[in-house]
Image 1 (cartoon, rainbow, N blue to C red):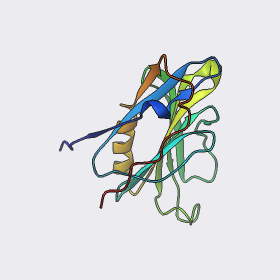
Image 2: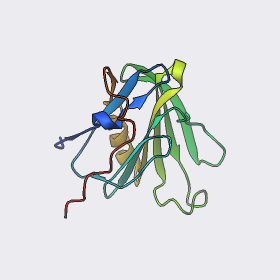
Image 3: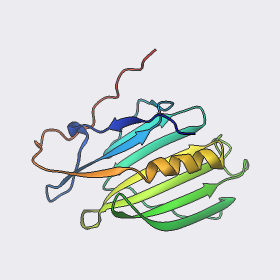
Image 4: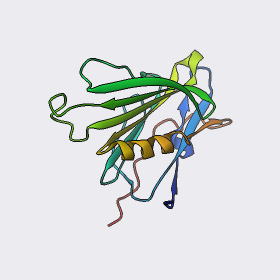
Length: 168
């Protein structure tokens, strides 16, 4: 079954700059069931989208860390891949109900894309899911993310904009 896809495009005023003046952004395509949430990053560009079964969030900046396995997880593995033409780590996690009682979704995907290694610029994509299948779907969206190298943008556009108003 093929779902219609809506393109969520980051705008020029959402860019992340490196110390040497390079500018990057990304495009992530998600199905229309995902609704953008009101979130704001402190030192990076962050976004969050929710459907009934999955919470997807992003963190694009200089302090985005890679996924790591720890004994607290019922299941955990981290694999190396190429995503959007960059080295990436893909973490797959499952936790039991006793491991994270404040987290109702037991499955997680954590993708760490190394955008500019010399500047420490990374894109992290997270999915918290009700089922393995919905996390597999989220991983397929993450594998299609596009990292954009932007040029000639004015310096005053550094902060992410407010999310669009919610449609009722």
